[in-house]
Length: 136
Ligand SMILES: [Zn+2]
Ligand SMILES: [Zn+2]
Image (tube, rainbow, N blue to C red):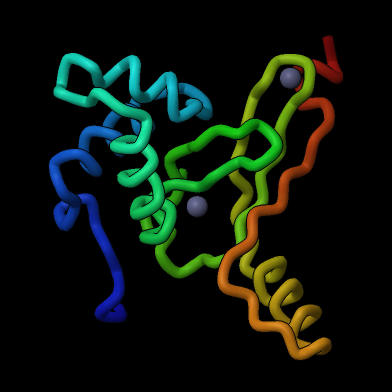
């Protein structure tokens, strides 16, 4: 394991509170939903939530879903390593699932490297219909 691995034990109080809210949520949360949930814990401004989220995303504990403008806790215990992540987002029921695929990460990196680009982070968002909705 590298020295850069962050676990929830390393988090500041605010970061742990935001992490906790995301961990118990059944799906992605917007920064404002998180703020509402944490008002009782002393959160007053969106900036406090955004600051914590920035760090959590940086640590790989949380992923940002651009298309939903929302955040989701990483579903892998050892997410630190994966700079690339893919999510399926069902447009019928809103179900969001994180897909783990090391091959995808490697392929995206090598694709970018071909044009001299160094990938630091990417989130692939696949929008469509989940199995349950397709069946129903
Ligand atoms: Zn992840
Ligand atoms: Zn669905």
